[in-house]
Length: 232
Image (cartoon, rainbow, N blue to C red; front, side, top):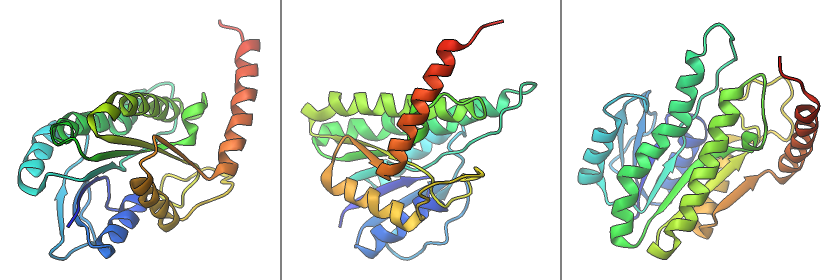
């Protein structure tokens, strides 16, 4: 029975993916800041915020008792509205979206390297190509997440470990609060994309392609604005 560790899986894509893997016969361990609606003999859940200081120790304990894991999928992610008088929410966005994922990798990947097997997946965003005045921390955290884990994928190829960066557009979750959400994807559809990525083991998956094209256009427009910009 294959084993998966899902981090940030009590709702949204993580929950949909948990249900999909359980249906396929996986043994799933979940970790999130909220309880999970999933249950059964094949499922184990730990309630913990990924920004908590004990994240590393908790993951090490899960690896020792529930591992080794064939796959680890990092699904946690948050956003924050920009407030010039208080940048603390931005720091939390970077902690949850980036640093906690790196912490998980430092615990799980060395065991995969030792076994010369395993797959680490992060859920990023097509916003990783954008510079955003409305949510600078979100775009920056996803840009760093994508860059680091795609580089890690290349570095780990000779060691038998796959790393995949899945970049989504708008998905029907509590994070999708934009007034305009073109080519909206359901969590179930997004989970199916991640499941396919687990089979194919590609380094980068961008979905849907139409949103990816739109983001490329927005990136060009943003670059043009930055070149014309002035600093105070």
